[in-house]
Image (cartoon, rainbow over all chains, first blue to last red; front, side, top):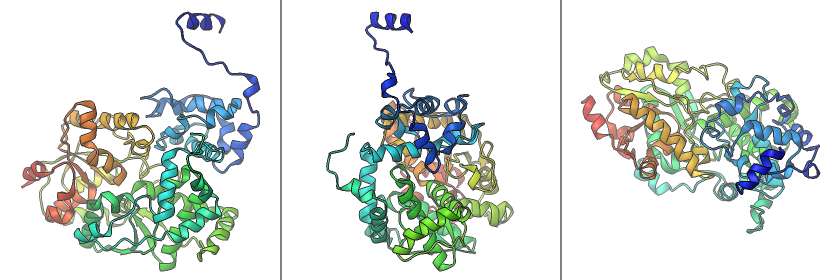
Length: 182
Length: 290
């Protein structure tokens, strides 16, 4: 590590250092407690997830095996505040091939839900929740256009969704204005 | 055969040809699709924010169909997986079901677990079958080479889909277009994801993923791509121009929904299948089969 850091310093690069003081040993248990998060403890780091991941093949900043390692090490703040947790395309390739049935897509969902609770909701999803809260659907459907195509009017139901968002606290996320950490 | 027809959001918003062609094919095959008032978001985007809210939203949609005594037929793969997964979870996990029902009671519903959810393509494959589709063919599509795109959520996670197809080596859609008389061409990375889910998160990665697939299909010599999901369709058809200009390439690759291909084989007029609404023009392709 010493030589590596020396070389990096010569080239003007910074190598991130993980400080033990910033680790939260309970993080993995918090993840494992959530529905869908149970598999995290089964990972034996074979890397099948990263090998088959279409996003990892394009951009190194999304690396499933590394994300699991970070969770197991307790790098809570870095994981939850990161940009990479939002990059899973939910293709389920890793999920299908994992020899330990870790169910990474579900773990990424758990991490995103935890990030939201910590105030790190991605602006895209905040906007989508606002739309779903207003229209019941993620877009405002224009019935005049549907009529032109000979299609019947689309009648969604926003009231009950609004209720669901109230019951589950999603509506609180919509109240904050620009105060998100992201 | 009668189903509660679940449209989702993307189809009514920007891909009417998906709905138009599905309804036309259903009519041809005596499948009754009932429009249900009150269906809302399946819960797929909500999962990113709150699993609990997503599950309640999915369950609420399932309840609406249960109340009509109908199974659900979907035409979006993301909706399919979200609804099928919630249905399975709630049927199998009593504790979860009770918790979700506590919430549903407040909005006047109760999940009973009495219905099934399937994608329209799966219904064609399992219940109508390739033989009946072959019998309906009136027009020869033998000159048409199609590259099938399965997308992700039609097949995966496979543990919710009762092995109706193989997630690593799928064949249902290939068999359906072959039954319609067209040729299915193989191409590199056939099972690859379209990337649409993250287009609003990181467009560079998303476009690149789509570009690679378009490259591979172009190399295969296919006349068009065939798919079933409006999210994939948006990525390759609606956004093909954006991808072309971003990477300075030209594809002009028509993107046909499976039901548009079947409709053409059944001798139905292209406009009745919404082919005039496809973003990438299909005129050349249609001339080829005239």
